[in-house]
Image (tube, rainbow, N blue to C red):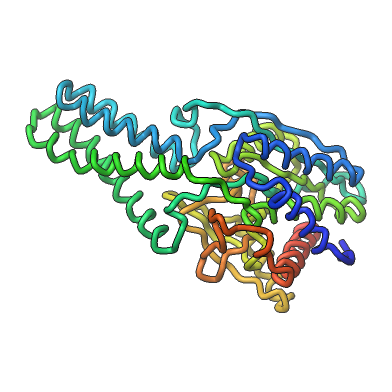
Length: 390
């Protein structure tokens, strides 16, 4: 796959179209729909045949936790008059939160409203012979809100510590209620007031997040969706040798990853020995690849793809690529791994694991660095070629 003149220029043009001309693209919003229309029209203009996966999205990553916080408060009030009912509700909330934090389907994700969203994708067949393997290249189109918890590194640290403490307190509260209802301990309810106060703070945090404005999302993640479109142009002109490539512009990642989940639910059975490369935040820093990502459960990227990334970094020292880890969040790599697809994320985190302009109002097109984008472009291309050769 040769490197055409102006590839990064075209990449930036797509970033500008998504992040500046369309702007904030919240999950399930009309603006997300316009961005996906742009992706579909661009892929079609390249001579590809784009398809779509339509689904419903929650539109928010915060709303399930808001409902869980309210559930803890109701359990606290209910335990005072009906201990066993309070205990059952507290246990149910903790179980649902565990499922939510480990990226598994649960009732919290069904909280209305449910909004229409979709993925746009296209395939590029290999140039010689039958398909020997599939490679999914995925970048999400939508953007996140800009809550105070992402406003500074200190606030984000406070959020990470607070969320852990709150979850532990809810689990202790549920266990205490079961024991208290069984053994008649009178001190359990007043002691659980700590959990109730933390639940109030969780509700307040989620409400503030829900009311905060959307970011324009140039770095996170117009750079990734635009990269998929730019690679589509190159691959359409010069396909890989033995690898079929799925070019996926996904929707609603910033909600509950419904787009990636729906893509693998529909298409995993069609794939031959698949692998996935997820693209994230490639306009300001990097190139880097994720060794792991985590909220509660740590997920490691595929060992074979890590070895290929390490090989590319050794062979192309001019790119300055390095490994890193993501804490406090997960990418669509998690959805590929859950579907049994070996995956890795190429991401623009710093060596310290920080995401420039992550979920901030300042994530605008003028912050993009063409020199960094050139290195990210070269690294992803080399990694794709290494997968094809493997």
